[in-house]
Length: 130
Image (cartoon, rainbow, N blue to C red; front, side, top):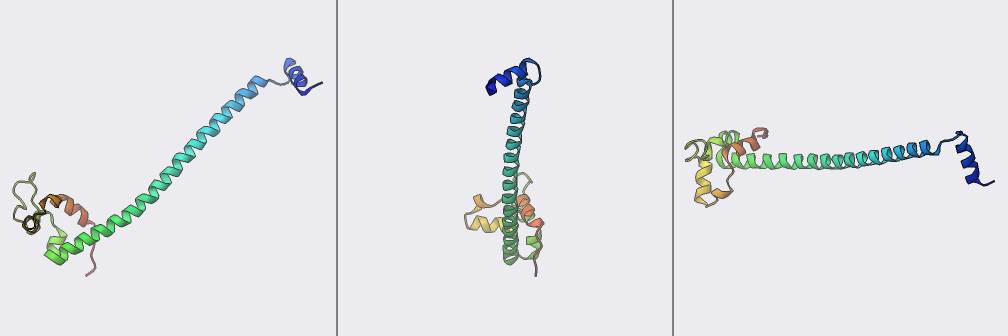
């Protein structure tokens, strides 16, 4: 008697049910595939989070540098609150004669000047050691 014959015999007398086992195996395979996809997604998120942490550190250093330059050039008061010193067309004429605005205009660099609100957001969380 061959292995195949034994299987057919057992299946015939309902001792084993190949279809139910195949269904179960198929379900398990699908589950494993699903879990593998989830693992891949989680690994990608971990990698992304690690990059964000590095980027946050770089971002903080950049903001510290910007605030330090503002303090060196314009003093502590302007470094603490640069917003009124930059012209914002959405905020009436406020800042049109601001010291930062004038310096950028004199050098022809106004297209590189962020809004006062953006500048304020960059430096607001930074504490400089004096």
